[in-house]
Image 1: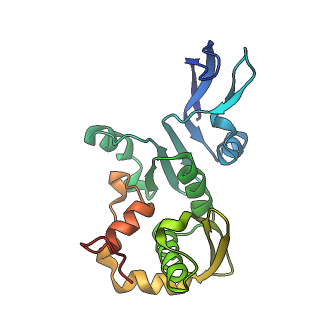
Image 2: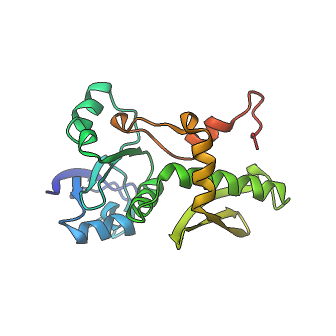
Length: 217
């Protein structure tokens, strides 16, 4: 069951303090409207009653999808071990995939990945491979890239978009290819769901970063 509460928030534009509703948890399979508002970002968009300006606020939220068997914990700060243990306790043994995300962009993308029933480690590996190909093809440098985004998976093929300030490039990555790559070095990519691991660009880069700071290919 989804849970919400009222908080007092101060508008960053006019300084007006007002009450607004935020959610501590969303149960997506029973509250489809809230699921849609999470994906669109509207759940985090509020409007000041005085100046009428709209803006986004990010707050901790536990997102539960029992149909697809995953839980996403939106929390920017590193949680304490006891907090993680209490939240993961009944979920990990039940076969839920548990992830923590630190940004709204990661939150929305992770929902799509898991609804597509794709392993998010494969997605991050596909993003990394796309970045390496982008650099190797002399389309730009790692510093030029502003984002690498998962778009969708259809018929066993993952679509990844690499974007710079003035252009974008799409890559079609067969899921079987990245599965083989992951299985060849399974220990490197192993994660413990009970710790609510953060599986994102920083995670995959940390696995491939050379000591001098260059990317391994």
